[in-house]
Length: 233
Image 1: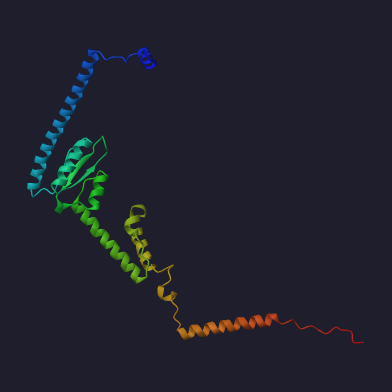
Image 2: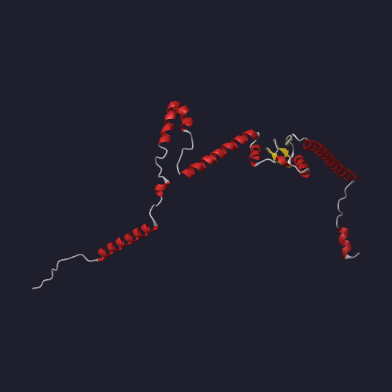
């Protein structure tokens, strides 16, 4: 027997897996495959159910959006996929693993930033309330622009409405009248800030200032007058 054969013969053989272990591994694999098949069937059934639900939503002309119940991420992903294929807009809102849900919109009713932000804050969306807020904002912006163009400063709040619950309505009215009467107090009109001189007047004033400064420097450079105290004797 050669050296290599003796070495191989002296080595221990690898342990063999008995039939019991093989059966256990096979059963485990079959169980996993069965669970995977069951999950796949569950997802297929959910997809089919959601496709029918979304199809009914699309046919209903009176329904601009559809909110689904809270569900797990894998099911939300299926809804997003179905909505995308159907040409719809979809977003998820809520807290993960608590109450996160999906909402879908028809393309002609796509939500704006204000609506999306309301859902993100967990608030209900009220279109009429949003329109009123937009109109109020437009009025405020217009008022601010008019105030800037007029060059006057007007208090941002109504003193009568703001403080009447503290000092009484009559006192608040008086404060509002005084504020209106003294609205220019403490402010300099923009016309007073402008230089009303012509260019020629500005140049003449500048030359006069330079001349005056030059003469002042010349006078300060001369030595002071002193008496001659030299002894002439």
